[in-house]
Image (cartoon, rainbow, N blue to C red; front, side, top):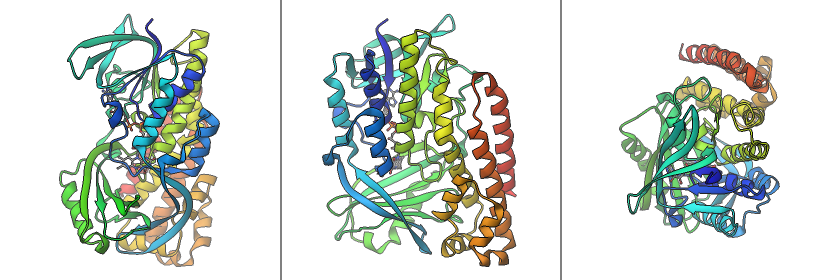
Length: 442
Ligand SMILES: Cc1cc2nc3c(=O)[nH]c(=O)nc-3n(C[C@H](O)[C@H](O)[C@H](O)COP(=O)(O)OP(=O)(O)OC[C@H]3O[C@@H](n4cnc5c(N)ncnc54)[C@H](O)[C@@H]3O)c2cc1C
């Protein structure tokens, strides 16, 4: 066997997984199609939560160096585009992802059990006698083809999900993501004349259903301005420019760079494991479905995955069942929260601009609503929060559906089953989702 573990994708989830496994003395190969200098170059606001920085220290023993942090964010504005605005206190950092990944890679390269293949594209899995024994890889400089063997294969390839997509149809991992559960994102980094110091997440429910816009200040008067829209809109740049034109501070801005991508925009996959293939980060839809951020969730996924891979490799029994605790631990920690964000996404999609403005004005949407939904909410809590809501029966119905949906999703994820109960759980979840989608579409 060439390696204990091969990881495809040298971004935040893949690199942290490698670090954990190296600490457990496993032999690890990390592969990326990018060169080491270009790791981290992708569309992303690069905001990371303070709690996640603490988590990285505790779970992986890695202290994020100050040099990778561009600046702190203590408040985030949630707003209707050109409408009401509320401020949320939340401690976050904007990181320079190139520096962060270079730091993590440099640290891993000091380890004798670690190898990194840059500019190599992974094409898929090799299956022999119903077991995954290797992956097919191509050197992007020479064109040479390789077959690399390992005990475990980790898909950390982000939305590309190259290994996930090469798993044959099975009962555990679903390969295809519906259009509505993917978002097309377009981002520009703009040089402004003056500092723009508010971090803004904006929604415009009647125009971009289920989508959002963000403005994230970076250093030296640069800002990241972007839009994410579910489905497959063909005119995203036009939509983006319509919004950009309406922001006075961007009038004389200079375009520094732009990028586009398709990202998952939903609750996590139902299972991240099939035999000896383990899926983490964006490849596993470990994302916040409301705002397409997923560094925080992918980092937790990396930890639960690496922990259980290390245990299985040491025991020398590696299969869906022995790795199953990765699924359970992730779902009980994050699954319910993600599903609640998905329910809020569907709820927002069903709102008119007037209704959205109203709930911001009455402060019944973030942070109070999200906190309440996470803790478990009673319907009457909503009415205590806002007397004005009683005058809006249509909106009350939507809120009631949201509360029912999020409570039942939270319960389902708290009851995430062991290996034997998975199919029954999956059917329950599927029925629940069909009901909810239909109810919000009414
Ligand atoms: C518009 C936008 C804004 C975002 N803003 C934020 C934010 O503010 N905060 C936040 O936490 N997150 C944000 N995210 C998400 C963030 O980008 C991800 O959390 C982060 O990149 C970690 O993802 P990952 O490790 O799963 O993989 P990715 O970062 O997607 O990286 C996957 C890696 O796999 C490599 N790869 C892909 N296919 C292959 C292949 N076939 N062979 C070899 N290598 C391959 C790629 O080159 C890449 O390096 C945003 C995402 C988008 C799209």
